[in-house]
Image (cartoon, rainbow, N blue to C red):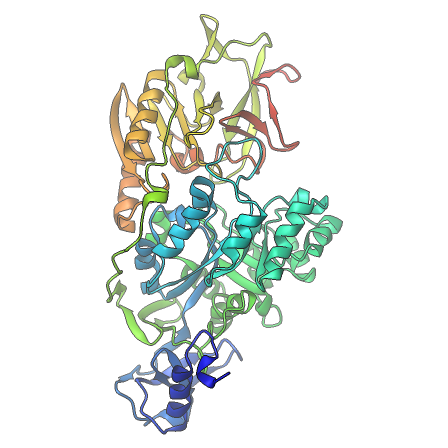
Length: 595
């Protein structure tokens, strides 16, 4: 083998040049003078100079004060940090394509994310994941991917696709795939289910990481879960839970999403002796929060404001995550690393004024200074994905049961949890009907992938809806169409409007559309800018309030009412699901008195 035949993340010529620039035999491409370095490797804060050779950092230190370079930028003592890496994010939760997402987070100093395309995988399977990989090429943001492990999430729902071991193995071979995504079936893993154990082993076979999802799991169950080889968890909500998982060897991902906000509870665990086992993640962040608060930079900013040393906070947002996923040459400012850099002019507020991606200036003063490339991608796998059965009032009918009480879902505000309550239904002409005077609305789940055509119907309380209907094709995790309404005809109009839009959100009253957000890519995403999407969501929320809705973030709450892996009661296209025993249950409930 010849030297030039050796393959790596960089070329032999790039390495040769970096060595020559560091040694002073060649001029560098850029010299960043008078930087105050946040050294995530040693936790030191040093006055220094950083010399680049193209995509790579050639040298760091006082020796480079007068080094030859094509361009010299005097930072005047501003802090320099590695670009941040979000260790677990569902880009689909931002409702925008990877390019639009990059435009929102790169100017804040985020230069990489590890994305779990679980949502698009449930709609479009492997072709959808491949579409996301193609759509995220050539961005000023590295988008690494973990293969969804739970498609579908349960057998009690109809998803758009199925990913078995063969499909997961095929995607694992991709150069930007770094692991198997959160293995959510933790009871099955603990019980020794061979298919779930094999998913963890597949990652190991490919030299990649199996990722975890173990909310509230502790004691011998936690030991059993981690004995499978699963190496991380992002579901800890208390200090004791996080501490136990750290002690058991898990890489602890501290999450601060839009709904699940765990940073404050877990921050005491961020210490020099544990920080190499802790990474910051956002998981699910809505467009408005990305616009107003940012991505993983928000966690770094909050950690610093809470008293965590800046270099330590940045370490959890960069180097530790890079080490966990084996992302070579990333996560630190050191010779041989990629020049993914953030110039921080206000460390206390972690305000970033410049961002370099692989040695190129990509953002300044809060805005991108490079164009997002026009995607040359076939969108066919993720277009025209909303195929509804023929809908009529009969499909939404709830026959009055013989039992005096029925099961009803109540969403918990600001959480993804729900509660099961028992109510005496309002019956008219032998049918259970919505009753806005009692805050009882119909909840409908319509299979939209063109498979079964099933429609699940139940009752929900807590929205406060007085008229009309809301509907969404974002319906975790199967992403069937979910609608809530007090008028069956408005529910039908909302559903059919979403089929016309190829998915999205809509508010309807008396047959008229009040507000809508088209999400034509898999019924989950749009390529419109984040700010525009955020503003449209505000109009949708305002329309919902006009209809009487009092529940905060009603579309987000609606999207989680079909999530059949988190307690208590959910609705899928197959019917009501009691998550605790993991089974479909009847609408009628005879065993508990009415509330």
